[in-house]
Length: 340
Image (cartoon, rainbow, N blue to C red; front, side, top):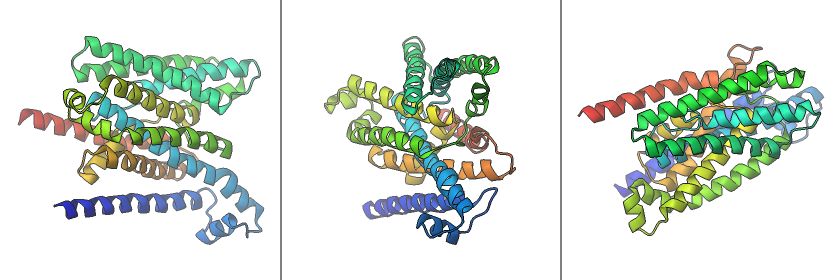
């Protein structure tokens, strides 16, 4: 059984890595201007003489594709942490209103800065998003003391998200500056306009967050078996919960700051990964969730850019089409288990 399980894990990781490689290449090659793999390799090696192709690859597609890989993985990892925290498979940054709170604070910060002709840096946007994420997470945690039912808690999180989204829409609608009005597309989720400066900042923030989450693998494994069991194993549950809240909020904040709120990835990707590996071990699921989220977003972004080209769909439109049915399946399976 041990050898079969190990083989399954190796195959599962190989499938994820292969899928990421395939869709990474497709995202760079396919677009309004189709570029062959040969031309991509020539541009990457500096051997191309076509400046147009060079610009498209290096300044537009490559930074965007790398950003999709990083932010997609972070989104799934944030969802995994929240599902672990609440012991519920449909808990996620979008469902609990955390993404909407981050979006609201980023929009307010950008309106404030742009109205005074000040530039909003990546760090400023991440900090604003983190404040918004923590505010909504704080409300959700306060509700856990008054509400025992997880279903009601999820509904409350969704309502918080609607309130934050309404405030954001008001800010965007009545903004007078043309640059602020362009927030409308961002507020619905989009990977467009990524730069290498953006990629550098998000890579550092998410790499540090990923390492910290990975270091929590053993405490999370004990926490999955119940708080009393974790305490018996010497885990400081209160400190662990604080770390989960902070790291999941930071990951959500980084995603929203650069790409806006993206729906369902934080729920669907961790669930699919658990099914693929047939395991609940954080040591496996933490890196696997990251890879799964990256693969999911690379696939969805490819469709968003090319399905109705030259019109680009909002990324949340595509992720909802594939993610929402998975949530429905999760709910149906939970209901069947509850009845049996």
